[in-house]
Length: 169
Image 1 (cartoon, rainbow, N blue to C red):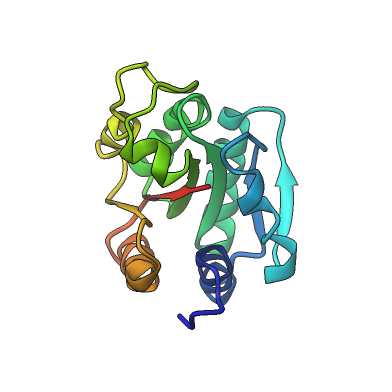
Image 2: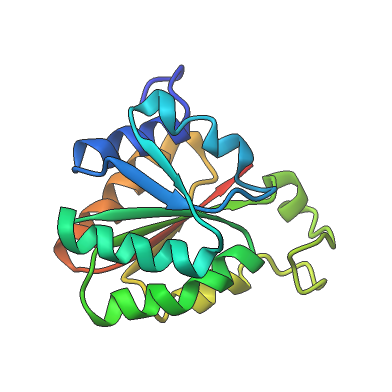
């Protein structure tokens, strides 16, 4: 990944290269910046009424196209989607769940902000997903993010099914 390429652009480009043409999801406060990169990356945004429906739609998309992607926001959004993610996992449907998270500085400082359990533990939601995904990653360092993205996408396609990527806003 070049120094002028954003993590979001790289991720969306790789998804497009794998056959993803549309990303399902729900806009939320921690993923709004991320959504600005969807269309310029050649992908179509498919907004949904809620995260559970978005995840079910992504599962169906993945069954037809071979891989699907969903974007939710940290905490409430990703937890709303987890039931459908678990269903896709059980059916070996390759789904990439992208979660827009609070800025790294907020997480490093363990700030007590909304969408958390007010305990400064930002990794709890990813731990919940660990039971229904084959891989998880947090894209904190731009120097290693491209390799992390490629690794989880490879795991999604070869180990099947789901992976989760947290991307700080």
